[in-house]
Image (cartoon, rainbow, N blue to C red; front, side, top):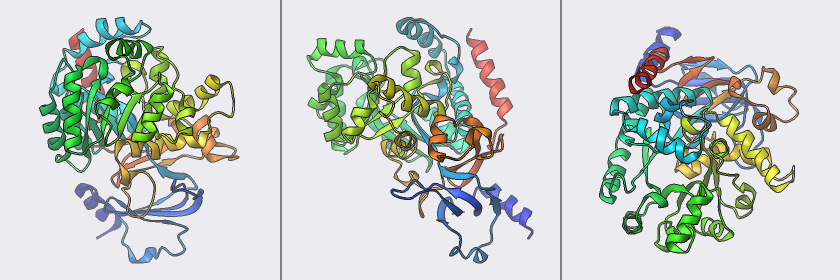
Length: 440
């Protein structure tokens, strides 16, 4: 069988053995610098990452061998907080006060969504993730099952978060969804969660905490995004959202807080002790005038930090390069110190930090045995030159134009501006426009 025939059969089966050579490789393993060598992918896993001298490549029949041309291989970015199907609201309701934006524009449109709409719109979000080098997302939206279907059909890795609140969902349904979605596909996992303290009755939250502790699971939620949210929690319980949730045992097995803009020192101490990750969303927090998260003080306490884009209605781009840049420069302004946040720390937030927050322990580094979720950065672009410091270039001057290839689970889904997914991208665009036009 010829090389082309072997590759065609392997692609149809969704399994390929791929050799990357002549690459710079940034495994992001602790203490390991960028090196030149090759990386092997077999059955969706990384089989080798090294200099190539000891690789014994002649013993393997490769479905494809890719000359990296001295470009950079690194772990894919993890979009650790987003609402993918909100792509239909991109640029629909901008430059409005938060309450008007949410109640007059967003909620009425979301009420018109069908399940089929949500599947299609989630796929649109996944296409954008691929162009940004994002290999996994942490999603919370109206119907998580719709996103799970989209993820399975596109071949995208996703972690879903329960979104129970007073307007929909119960503790029992949250537990049932947790088990059902975790059995759906190797690409799909689910975490226990709820929308927010301010949208969920205290008694309901206490029941959720009991359930999470019974099944020994971490819990995730929107928290301390705005000053108003925190002030109203003090009015209800005389403590902050973090303090209230901790007092009812919500974080006994850890978890994560989306946003974490308005946090007290006591809140940060809770995150440190209970191993609660903070998922920061700098673009969304700026666009909605929520504030600037104090990431430096969280890092000083050893709190794990991840980055997310939030949804397309409040960002509007699903672009991790923009999030990295803002996560690096905003703390400098907040602290009035240009050395306040190191770009290398931000790059880890966008990769390993996200993987840790999402429970994707097999997707954090390019290490032997880990999932082959990786990206290739095009170093032959002017914004990557000169190469005084490659990691600083990625954070301060990098952009989506540098994403040459995105691989998930050993499959190349995006390469040289072309999508390799089961559906035609142009058709997805047309259907998304039909959805929004139907609603107007």
